[in-house]
Amino acid sequence: MQAYLWMILKITQSYDGAFRWHTVSMEFHLCGSSPDSSCPGMAAGVPPDALGRRVACGTDYGTVRYVGGVSRTAGIWLGVEWDDPQRGKHDGSYEGIQYFTCRHPKGGSFIRPNKANFGVDFLTAVKDRYGLNDQQDVQYGTGDTVVFGRKTVEFVGMDSVAEQQRQLNKLVDISVRECAVSHAGQEEEISRACANMRHINLSKNLISSWETVTAIASQVQNLETLNVSENKMRFPSTSTFTSSGFSNLKILALNQTEITWTEVLLCAQGWPVLEELYLSSNNITVLERPDNVLQTLKMLDLSDNQLLDGNQMHLIAQLPRLEQLILRNTGISSIQFPDVAFGCKTKMFPSLKRLAINGNKISQWSSINELDKLPSLRALQCNNNPFVDTEKNPETLIQLIIAKISQLEVLNNCEILPAERRGAELDYRKIFGKDWLEAGGHWNPEKNKPSEEFLAAHPRYQALCLKYGAPEEGELKGQQPLTLKNQLLTLTIKCPEKPEQKPVEKKLPESMTIQKVKGLLYRLFKIPGSELKLSYESSKLEGKEVELDNDLKPLQFYSIESGDCVLVRW
Image 1 (spheres, rainbow, N blue to C red):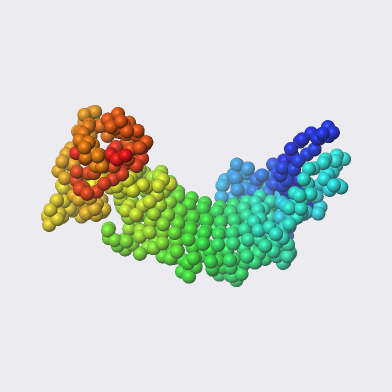
Image 2: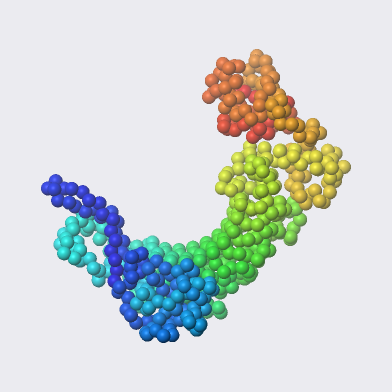
C-alpha cells in the first residue's frame, strides 16, 4: 500500500550558511486520504467481499452496491452509492437497466475498481499514522538526514521525533481518523503491538460492519474510550456472541453510523460498564425500554434523531444513573410526566441533572412547567423553541423559566445567581398576581382557592406565595405608561452603623446601576465608592436583608421597589 508523507518544516539558516529543516510535525496519510490522491497503489483486483464494503475515492466516501459488468462496456465496474449525493450521477440504472438502488435519485455512479480505496487493516494504519511503516517512499540516511529521491534534507531533532513515534507499545491514546481502516487484520496482531491502548479514535474510516469493530476491540485489553463515528456500517439484527473487548469500555461514540435503537440495545449487552453513549445523527425514531442493559449509563446523546414524539422519553426514563440527556433537534413538541401531579416529583429520570432540549418544536409553556417535576434537574438548555417567541423581552423570558423550575442552577449555559432567582420569583409573583386573584386566589389562606386552570398554567405560584407572601393590592395595580416618573423609585437611604447620620429619601431611576448609586452616595457622604457596601430591606419582607453585590446590575435586577430602604456601610 502506497503512502504519502506530509511534513510541516521550519527553515532556519545555520552559522555556515546552510539551510536546516526543523521538524514541526509529521503525519503519514494513506493513499486516498489526500485530496489529490487517485490511489495509484490500489490493485486493479476486486476483493471477494466487495459488495457492501465501504470505499473512498479521493475525499468522497460510499458503499459498494454492485460489482460486475455494465451494458456496452468492457471490464468490471463498481456501482457505488455515495454518502454525498452531489458526488453521484444517477439512481443505479444505466440505459434502462437497474443495476442497484440508491436512497437518493442521483446518489449513485459507476467507477473502475482501481479508483476505489478499500482500505487497510488497523495496525497498518497505526504504523503509517505514527511513522512506523517499514516500506515508505522516504529513506532514512545517516545522522539527522532524510533522502527524498535524489535530494538529502537535514533535520534538526530527527532522532527525538523518530524515537518518540517508535514507542508504539507505550501509546495509550491512538487516533487513526480518516486513515482508511477497513478491517482488523491478523488475529492477535494488535494486542502484541499496542498492549497499552485505552483510547481509540476510529472515526471516518471504511469500516463496513460492527463485527470489524468487535474484532479490533477484542484485542485491546483495557479499552475505555472508542469513537467509531462517521462509519456507515451494518449492525447485528439478532443477539450475538458478546465480545469481552468492551468489558472496560466507558465512553462510546456512534454518531452518524446509521444505527437504530433496537441495534443499540442488542449491542449494549456487551457494554457492561458504559457511562457515556453518543448517538447523534442516526436512524433513531422510536425508543424501547433498555431492560437489563445500559444500567450504568450517565450520559446519553440522541441529538439530531427525529423522534416520533416527546413520549419516547418515557421509555428511557428508568435508567437509574442517567445524569445528562441531550435531545437537541429531535423534533419533540411537548414534554409530560403524567405519573405525578404538579408540586410532586416524578419517579422518572431519578438522577437526571442536565437536560438539553434546544432546537425543538416545543411551543407551550406547559412543557416547561413539567420540568419542575424532575427531582434532580439542575441545568437546562431550551433555546430555539417556539415557546421562546411568546415573550419578546429576553430578560423576562429568562425570569419566567427560572421562576417555573425551582431547582434550576444553570440556564442555557449561564449560572443562575441567588439574587437573580429571588428577583425572578418576586417578579413572577407580581406579574401574575392579578390573574391569581381573578382565578379565586385570596390573601386569606382560608379563602385562597385558585382554579385548576390557573394552577395548571402556574403550578409554582402557590409555593411562591408561601415563600414571599401573597402579593399586596398595591403591587397589582395595572401597568402605567412607561414614563420617567413611573420608573423612579422612592428609596430611604440609611447608615445603620452611623446613627448620627439621618435617613435621606431619594428618587432614583430603576435602571440606575449599583455603581452609579455608589457614586451618588460618595457625593452625599464623601466616602469613596470602593469602600461602600450596599444592601436593602424590602418594606414587605421585614427582617430580610439582600446584598447589592454586583456593581454592573441595575436596581430593578434586585426587585427593589418604592418604599424600600437602602442600607449603606463602610
